[in-house]
Length: 278
Ligand code: KIV
Ligand code: NA
Image 1: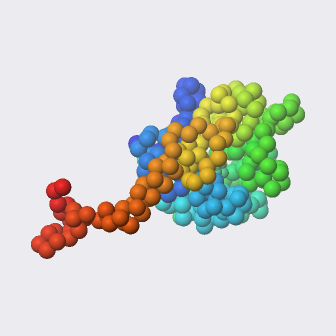
Image 2 (image 1 turned 60 degrees about the horizontal axis):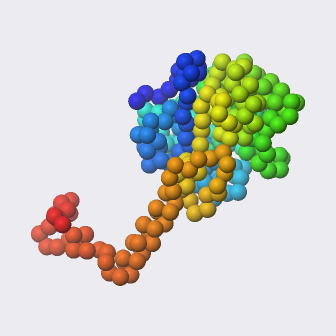
Image 3 (image 1 turned 45 degrees about the vertical axis):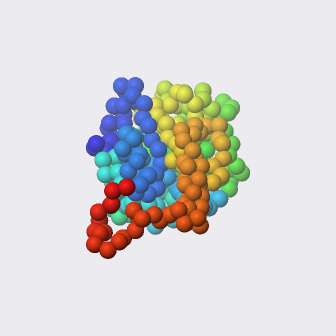
């Protein structure tokens, strides 16, 4: 496949084709996502939570994002890769924002960056876009502000908050963003934003009206030991259970001397790269 481009995103929306995104953080997850046919991969700073074990996305650094982006790009060379700009790396003015985004593109190899915020970062978005860096917006619940917000709260509940969301979304579109993620937004508010924009909305916990969806890899396949059930997530597999029982079986077989067997062993005159017949 060939990576999607920002103009293709708008065309998909015009044609009424839904966009399916998933996060990925390393080489094998990216390979599998590409083979499964996702439209784009997000190297999300949810990396901090699901891969690095932090409580929030705040500790994730630019170098973390670049390292993981590199491995994802190698795993999914035919897929559009969007990388999150981590906490505060786009909050020190357009110059610093451009410098940091340029590292994500040049060192990481991403095709686009994602920033959390609306009118407050319009200038930064404009600077990136005019420098040739495609920008995906992110509105609604913005996890980098979790310490300020005080927890996961549904956004767009009342008229005022829905209007602010719409105004921010329009500002991002005007600033040149090619799409906008809507996280944890009431369905009617997300529907309204979707109707009024020409760029696609990508929902996560934003109901049925969006132009596309994004899910966190580890949530979608329950990859981890304590992936919490979340209402907005659908689990399509339980890889955590599969991995745990596979490892437990291995441990057991080592203790019981059931592994390795003769066919895993090298006897005189056998070649290293030739597996014996069972
Ligand atoms: O970091 C992330 O995974 C995200 C998605 C949840 C949109 O920002
Ligand atoms: Na994120």
